[in-house]
Length: 203
Image (cartoon, rainbow, N blue to C red; front, top):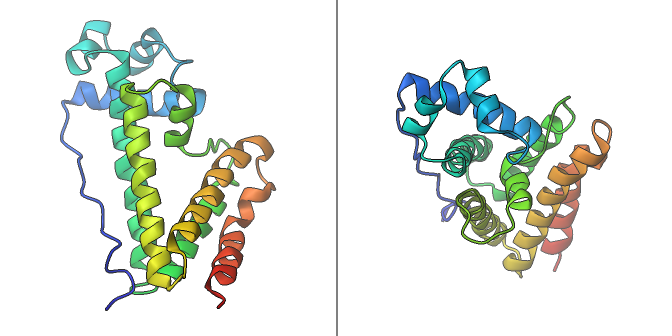
């Protein structure tokens, strides 16, 4: 049985939007990721996008829905990167997660890196049921599921613990990169993950 049988690829939920809506979403993506969702108002988005406020509300019923749409697009992009890393090492779950985290470590060293938009949104919106938080929670639950499946594929005696340990390392890299910036501990997240995996697989 292939080692990655239970690591299912994501199903894209991307749908075509009218040009104005695409422009609004593109501007919102840039501003929300760089500055935070709560820090950016609708007026700033429409001004930078060169559209009117009624145009925004024809495409997105509220700022909350725009934030959720931004995160749904972020989710698609996130899983595309994840699946791309997985595809580089067919049947080798350990190499797959190391490949993904090597890329995370490299991205975390770039100027302007703000960690994971999903993590940031969950921190910004602690209230259960908020549209933005709902999207971020779904992403994180799926990541946890996949990491546990990968740990099982590696042959870990306790795949749940290893999977959760990898998740904690990933989230730590996302947050610490915003504190330390280039040269910080996030650059070694792949190495730390490999050490954790090696220790977990020892009999």
